[in-house]
Length: 415
Image (tube, rainbow, N blue to C red; front, side):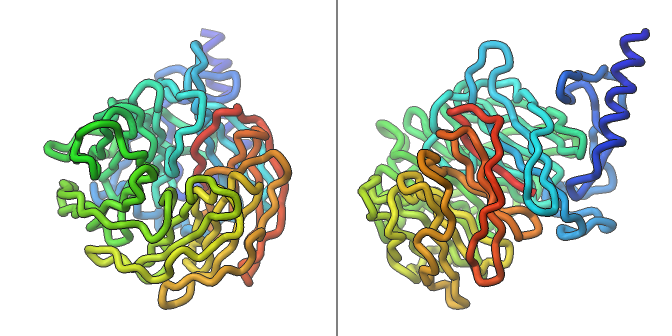
């Protein structure tokens, strides 16, 4: 009894001392709540969200808290680890108003990572309203779901990914799709319920451009379009971009295949006016990388073709919340390149080295804070997260480097 009371007091004290971070605060279900040195008992309230329509599970914000109502926030990274005891984990950092990060917890996903790079963007995604966090477990072919609280994360579900080696996720309303990069590769759809449980959608697994034959064509990322009526998938091995039509029930058809403007299309993000911004790694050739943009309206129409970064291995893309600026992270050049996204969707290179991450960092995935003022780049090589402030003209100012990661870390999300 004394032990239960002690654990309860530690949990309460942690939550009281921690300022609210994300858009929606709910009472944690402690059955799967992991805090530093503490695992609470199972006698707390349910994590189920009440008073929310199914279509609003990931998009709608609490009316009392807008997306920009708090200067504080959080950053999450997947360790992608193969530790035989703890397995894959989510590392949570608390973000201060100035962008500085403090490591506040490590939360097991219940699955296994790969221990090495996933070769993808979007291995970890946060819902638009900040309530849910989703990650791939590439080593155990699973997806884990967490409810997000200021005190930490609650593991609500873990399901098979519908294929092998899941590498990328995308979420919209109550729908989640995963990109599986093992075997012949595929995409698979799921429905999220109010308790954070995933159910595989019937008839929602689709092949990539290889039609399910042979090895997967190096898929890099999956994402819904802003309207939610399309899914986009990049294929690094074939220099193709696939699109899938999505109906209101979440069922997909396709793919429709498009030839990429440049070689090795990898990561991407959406900017203003349905503009898709895609990184092109050009096989990692020295100083050969580029970024292209497309208009998305049931098909892809090229706007800017392969605007060079002047850098090496530009594999990941992050776009500011207002859609005005895009940044590629250049793993081979220890830098971020900055672009202006013009009103017509065309790209203008602002600075090929807008952000310097430092020698030996090899930045990979990147994420923009929910207030749009900060961008964070993941550096598995230096086992750090590197933060920058986004200035009004799109230039970047270094905030600092924050440690606590493993060398195989893959996937980053920010609020």
